[in-house]
Length: 216
Image (cartoon, rainbow, N blue to C red):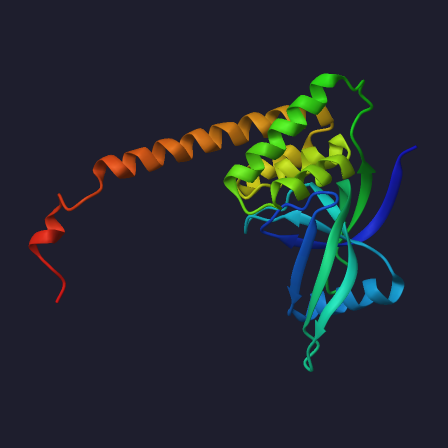
């Protein structure tokens, strides 16, 4: 059954994934109004990638877990978590903030094999190598706690990917392909970083013009 809804829209320069935590500082009047309405009505809002010129038509809804701080001028710090992906059918501009008629979607149903476990374990291991993630023991517990779709989103949310690359992962409807492509891409990022480090070692040292013109 296709689920439709009209939700408030928050264009940002980032991509949110289901299950992903997201702290936000709300300071614009229109978004203060939007968040307060979401809090009063206990409803979600949508986050879509905005590059300064164009809004993507696929995003992810966010639920407000907690108001971390409320300021005297109405600004607030909130803590959200990604919920469901959606496709924008129509933008609605009847309020101070943007709304959208959306259709929610999820991954296709796929047959799980041992291959999935191997790819997921490799992906988590690569995450440990490139960014600040939980210690290995905690990471193993995380691996057991999350399903494969959750792990694929965790990998896709790595800081090693650009917002545009994350958007591609967000739009995928195959858990296995997202898992495979995310893991393979992390491997390439690590290889590229290692090459960059080696180049810096080779060209490093004092063999440059600046040594002849010391800064006083």
